[in-house]
Image (cartoon, rainbow, N blue to C red; front, side):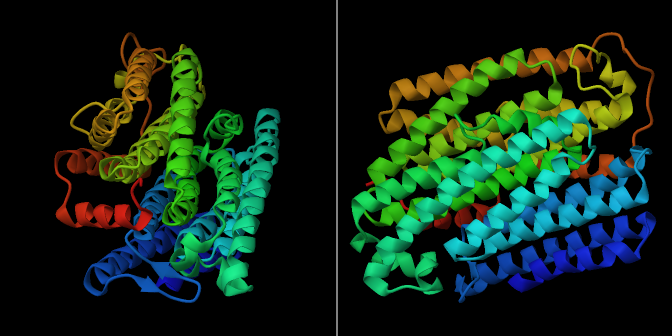
Length: 480
């Protein structure tokens, strides 16, 4: 069934040349819906039969979380794209087919990344996401979009090259124990012998992996591509990149992180994650209040949340790692809502300037309500899911003795909260600067679904999800 996830994306690519936009948009969304159904089947299978470990593919309590994020946010993004592309009336049919070609390639690469157990295939997959998203960032072919795509591919290619070197170092450590070949790149085969690999080699490898994949994840200090890429890409792509791609990059780090933890060098890897996460949070708290472009502001918010995920993981406690995984889900859903709301604003008002937009409650009344929910949710206000994950993170930090680090995070989150309120509630309230616009149904439906999920999960987390995340924590390993 895992291969069916990949097959739907390949079918989506194959049918593009043979269908006009009116048929293509619905078929593409339907194929993504199939992937949601497949995810639900895999989730039930995991609960009933336990983990599955194949030659190249795996299914366990960790990667099922990512399969769910990619499938669910992917489906909602494709639904949203129907309305978004119809609103972009200047786009010709050939250009729309190009959009679906690259977005399907992007989705295929991410699903392959989170489904495989082979570190080599993971690396190839994340490189494929770089290539496909480069074309999507430069989709509008204007000067700023092309510049953003060049910055993105240069920085991310540099990062991925560093990550490759880290994986090669791990491979050299493994072949001395179990021999060479693809077998030695499979983390399922590496985990049982992790404690026999040279510890210094693993430490060096982790630094390269963290800097490399951390660049793709948007962690400081190699985050410079993030605000430009998110600002210039079509909004459905911004939503996918922020919610899904960066989550997949984090997942790749986690898989190698778990090898390091099993090898007995957890203290080094946990501390490294904690402080690079803390640095990213602090840096984001400086940029967010100063942002004048709402899509760039959301990009810096993504950097902040990736920092929180890294910081939570770096705490190394059960509660901290649980909070990191819960935050992964919460951020994916909430940031998708925020970018979809901003996309509705952009295609209707044709400006990204915060100061030019006032009175959204009257201009785009439904979008404005969704945006208001998103603002409180993304800043970690109760009763939303991000509040639970951030609260658990702070409690864990203080409990584990990271007192000053926890205080710094709390202060940074406070700055970010007030920065968001100042920027977005200025846009939502006051006298409208534009006349009322018609909102597209296919843009509103995905936002409505996301609001229901964000509020619902904030009020009640099902036991199946709790158990899944708890099992995933043990898969990663706690600090020792």
